[in-house]
Image (cartoon, rainbow, N blue to C red):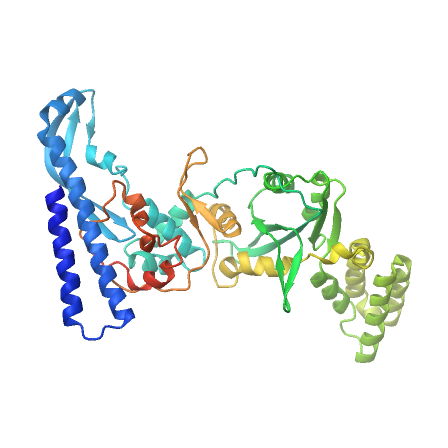
Amino acid sequence: METIINVLADEFKNKITNFLKTEKNPTIEVAESALLGMALEFTAQSLSALYEAKDKELREDKKSRKEQGLTIERAGDSREIITMIGALKYSRTYYKKKSGGYIYPIDEYAGVDSYMRVSGGTCLALIQAATHQSYAKSSFEVTDGIISKQTVMNKIREATVPEYKAAKPLKTVPYLHIDADEDHVKLAGGKGTCTAVPLITVYEGIKRQGKRGICINSFSISVYNKSPDEIWDKVLTEIEHRYDISKTKIYIHGDGAAWIRAAREWFPGSVFVLDQYHKNKYLLQATSGFTAEECKIYRAKIRKILKSGDKNELAVVQAEMCESHPEMVKNIMECTGYLLRNFDAIYIRNIDEEANNGGSTEPHVSHILSSRLSTRPMAWSRKTLEHIAPILAAGACTLEKPSEKEPHIICCTRANCIPKHAKTAENSLGLPDPDHATDIAGSFKGHLSGLYGILRPLVGFSKS
């Protein structure tokens, strides 16, 4: 094994030397593309050599095989696994077990299941890509289209959100803000049927950075196809993993939907605050069809009433508007009725300063869910939504079961890069498990390292 690695290392060294000699004044872009390709090829060949050397070692060790109850059935069976650095190919020996059945010991050594065609690291990279673009584009970006769209979807359905380990000690804060809203997503095969995907974002308030507001220590949760009680039970659990809320005042921001108001049953003493977007939306719509002068007058009246806190006055203005425009009674009653039902949730902003330190429901939904689920002409199955919505909200996923001690987790933030084609390695990385091929050095941690954004466009896959 050591001899093979030395030979490969000498070849690697010669290739680098020749490149530096023959390439006149190589730019960094040219150099990193060529040299990284050589490095990946070397590590791939090293991993192949490792597996094949281990296979030969077991095949020639008759004593060990006898102790394990293994009899050679045939040798030289090839295996190919798509990994983050290309298609890993190696040959191995097939054995018959004395206890019954057959086995490839080297596949077990490499952590490869009999059905596995794609390494865990590649699966996670596909899921990461699919959180911001189509299945087809994700496959092309990560594997040059070797993986089918169906496979990408299947991998999403196998993924879960990693469990958050409870903080010790729990954090104590005076206030917490909870934004609750939903995205309306088209269902596949439903002839335009839409479904609501809820999103809840929890944070400690908003800090100003110039004209922008940034949520402090925010985290988001989305669980699809669940009852309001199941949703808020999940939210409460996630909060209690992070905070001691025994002395925390909680503000719930939303549009007043029944499932959002149900949160108050799970957070006793919490305050519901109507978000500004929906307040302004219904205030403006209430005077739809009025003259410009009437709009100015009635909108000013309503705004003054909402600040004064006199709910009865709003009912008086409602009647006045209906009397002046009987042909618009339905719209007036609907819009002003919405303001009346949520009057206290609007007025609270005038008497409680902290109530204004939250309420970013629309931006959260737009950024986290809508950008992938509903802004493009696409449709989703309920089963896929149950998996991808939580992943989009958490910004991370894993293919490991929750019971695993150290699950392989990937961050699902959007990568600003589009990989190009690169040479397919005959084999893969010099580690005993292709799922961890990207862990050989920081440069290869495509889904973790910041350097990945620079290197990834230069390394892709070509069809074998």
